[in-house]
Amino acid sequence: MIKNELDLNGEDFNEIKIENVGKVFLSKGNRNSIILEKNSEDRNVDFLIVHGIAFIKTLHSAEENKRDNYNLYITFKSEDISINILNVGSFQTKDKVNFKTIKLKAINCGQINLSVVSQSLFFGLQNVFSLKISGDTDTLTLQKNNVMLSNLRKFIVKNDSGNFY
Image (tube, rainbow, N blue to C red):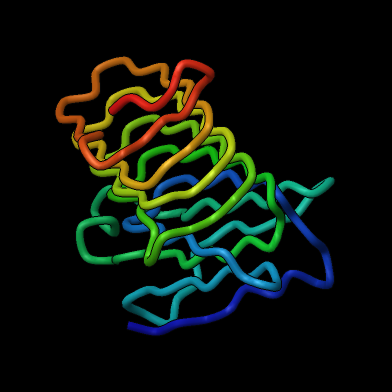
């Protein structure tokens, strides 16, 4: 696999929109970065940052998708992040991540596996095969449609009346 860090041209982002990627790995750091990993040197990826929103879309046919594997490693420095994913194999954290607010909208995702500490989580999920979340948050908003398997057993949500699992 070949890894290339995408050139941000000095622009910051706190929102990202991703389309047609195999695996996405989320981490927290002291600077924003996006690393693209793929099987071949060909670069069939649209990448653009506009008004603080990073857009990443792989451009390939269904036949190319069978042999090419695109993975993204995204590091956010912002405390408040927003992520929109469409047609992604898996979305996961490498380690436990700590953000103030995480907004995730996912359509057509095979697996979501997150370990988080946050004040607020907002999830809008549609056509997700597996959802696993661990960690804790003060508030959770979960809208889901056609989520096959959900596991929130090690996830603590705090509110005025105490903790519940």
